Length: 346
Length: 129
Ligand SMILES: [Zn+2]
Image (cartoon, rainbow over all chains, first blue to last red; front, side):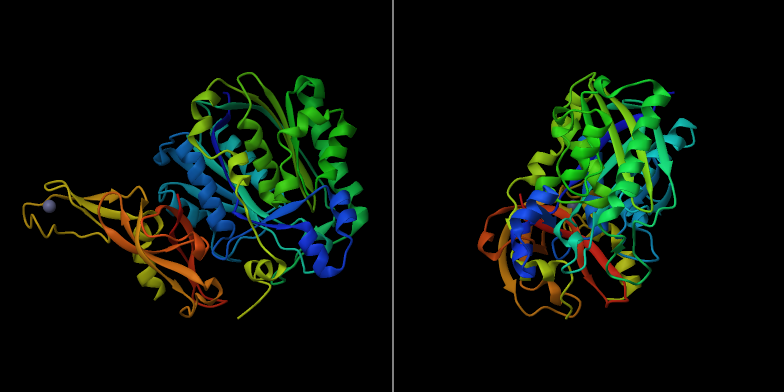
């Protein structure tokens, strides 16, 4: 049975802060930070936006784009590292908001930045096994970086939703491969507002080791090579890492260009790779092959090999494109940003 | 607002589910179970509003009620939905963007929260179309 993407949708809040503005507050050299991270600005959630509202908006965009009958949804899985409740699922609120309740299964996933792709894999399994007709997999985050911490320059807000099924496919997912180890590169303890990380050295044993292992593992498994793909997208904690890992694996700058949304968006954690994939689908045509590898600290990577079908022409324009979501931002200063991120309490 | 009271109204708050009288064609939000025009002849069914409409009038709230403090200042508007009924809702945009007659569409947002440890209320707000 072929399993793949029936429809997709993304969502990005309208607010942005420029990295220069953050650097000015902390007395950092903006030029060297922007040059090092290759990120110019990042999205900021509205005062009334969180991982749940972003998940709902992305899910509704996916459902409307594919004109999907929500009564077919057999599963909803929401991946996030910023679920608003410690106990009370994001996925049940999404199910109610898309009118899919009550005859379905739902759960929240957590795996740093790759919880959303883990949700895609789970839906693929359930669809492939014939247990459900279609499933909804979402990655959404309103990530937090402690004030003054390096993460504050990139932690952003956004999400993407994918409807996974076995008929009327917009893109076939040929296969997926994961690489998982116990690596303490990044964590947040229960009740703590901001994450901790192992520092600069964690890129190599964390991001690079896992992304390259999952990517080469998948290509070895199905007998493909980088030049077989029209597009590639990798997790984007900053602009530098995905470009470096692409080069390491043998992908060209042209292949990753369409999906590299991080310079104008920041790191949307669970949304990162999945928004990048949405940006690629926004412009891909029938027969295009896409290689995607997500990464989550802790650590693990999920790689996917995807081929676009002719149905993309039918649904592409029926929902907001990532490029449209990035347009007309409202820029804010650091004080307003601090209020939006809940760094000020009343 | 109690948790139970919010819970009962989830379909209306999340998705603007109202009612529609198929006898006279009138739409109701909040939902009515009896059409005031057709009375006993009215046939009432659920109706999901498109969520599009225009601002009839608005005010900018600077001093917000408990649970809404962080959102101030915000725009509170009377919105006439395209299907007919009017409702009061928040329009999320700068106050300089607000204009009587402007087109809006519905979005899913946080309405407020009981307290830091209490329930979070979600529902429908509006943004410029
Ligand atoms: Zn009537």
